[in-house]
Length: 289
Ligand SMILES: C[S@@+](CC[C@H](N)C(=O)[O-])C[C@H]1O[C@@H](n2cnc3c(N)ncnc32)[C@H](O)[C@@H]1O
Image 1 (cartoon, rainbow, N blue to C red):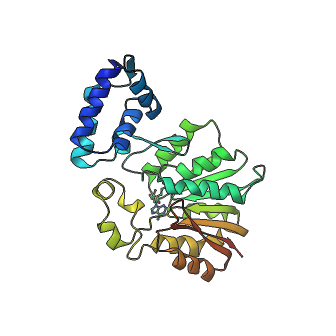
Image 2: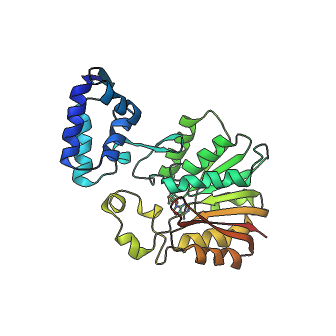
Image 3: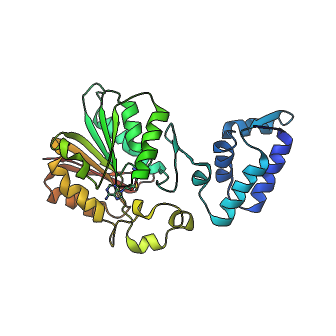
């Protein structure tokens, strides 16, 4: 805990931004490490004579900021925290930093299943930090959720994130390759969602340093054309989904037509491509027969 005058703090902040970086990242650092939200920051500018409390001293905050500027380390990995929807999630280099566009998966699902009382079994394949599965489990306490990942370290984080964000018990965690850990759930799944690794190899090589050097490669790279994992998920889905069960997959901006064909080839019906808030064809959804 550290107490400084608002004036000192605002001068410190100005000094940091003059070194480089952007205001959004600095505010995120101040919030997630210092404990001072963007709203508190805006109030400070009005009441600059007050004192403020920070969770940490300015030297430590500055050392994080310097590291971010020098190595391009994402703020979320420095603080160990990522905000996603209304969740505060622990993250480490074992999990992808959950992206804003992925938040829409939760809204799409809410629109499909308007009646929250329904007894639904859902699975989030490749859960990473647990973002999607935790949001779905919290929004639908009567549903039974399953979250899988091939990375045991990621699953540990996801499981902690669930415990830290709720007192519910409707989400279970399984380790393994896509559907493999779900042998006991054959033809029992109402809804499967996945944000699998889908970046094509040539695009992966060109990703910004903050992604390529820090985020887990096996969470991003989807083989030569990016479709390796998407194909496996779609091809095996019929063994696990109930009749008329839903499969919803996030894909790269230019993959949706191919993904739609994969759904149709595997006997899915009502296949639709859905756009994200930037108008990008980001999701493909279908029902098994
Ligand atoms: C793009 S990340 C998505 C993470 C999280 N669902 C999200 O949206 O932020 C893909 C996830 O799939 C996992 N994954 C990669 N290969 C896998 C496999 N063969 N089986 C299961 N999970 C896998 C990765 O460990 C990673 O957590």
